[in-house]
Length: 136
View 1 (cartoon, rainbow, N blue to C red):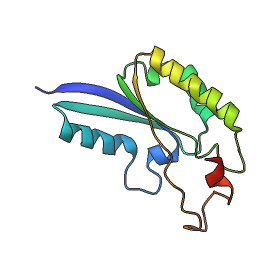
View 2 (cartoon, rainbow, N blue to C red; view 1 turned 60 degrees about the vertical axis):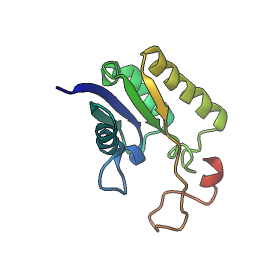
View 3 (cartoon, rainbow, N blue to C red; view 1 turned 135 degrees about the horizontal axis):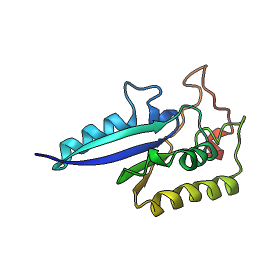
View 4 (spheres, rainbow, N blue to C red; view 1 turned 180 degrees about the horizontal axis):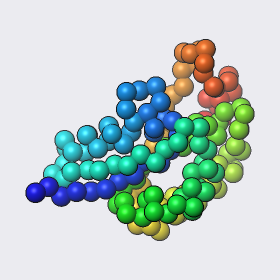
C-alpha cells in the first residue's frame, strides 16, 4: 500500500493552469508519483488574477486550505507587476514574507516558484505592458 503525501499549490493563473492543458497541482502530482515511492495528492488553491495581498488574506480567512498539507508551492507576483496593480517592491517583499511566515509556522515545506520569462508581443490579449518585465 503506497504512502500518501498531501500538498497544496498557491498562486495565480500560472499555477491554476492558464494557457496550458492542466495546472501545476496536476502536473506536480504526476511528476512526484513517478519519481518517489509515495503517492502525492496536490490541491490547487490558485485563483486567476490574484495578487500577493489577496493570497495572504485568503490564507488568514481560510486556514483549512493548507493546515492538512505537508508541502506547498507558492507562485505569485505576475499580477502584482501589471501596470494596473504595480505593487511596490518593498510592499511585495513584506507581504510575500508574511505568506512564507504563515506557511513555515504551519510546518509546511515551501517551494517558491519563479515567474517565467514574459514574451511581450506574444498575444494581443496580453495584460502586460512594456515595463512589466522590469517590475517582475
